Image (tube, rainbow, N blue to C red; front, side, top):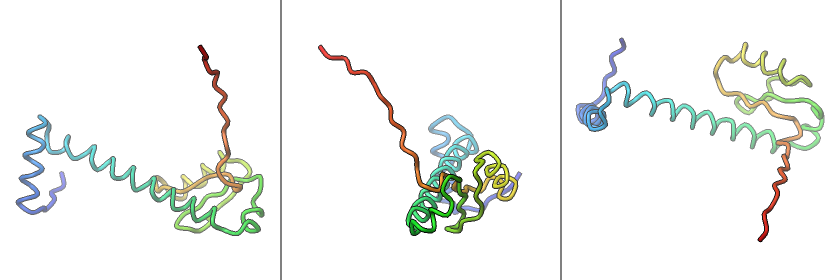
Length: 118
């Protein structure tokens, strides 16, 4: 077990809120921390994508037909085989969020849905 030091006020707030919800402090905090990690990862991926799509077309065109991996606003790898690229990135970076996408940018998906008219 790891002990964390927090102010008395924060400690009481956490304990009171957990108790109000009928949860242990750990049960109360764990989902909150996981949510924050998820939000931070999504923000990082969005920033990486914005950076990549902001690169000159001539640079992005060099990787046409491939997927690229971007980490900390640096192109760190690329491959025509997305699965192989993903495996290399996971082995190199573990669970750290790294953008992997087609070099050309997000691909559009068209969904055709029947309309019901009366």
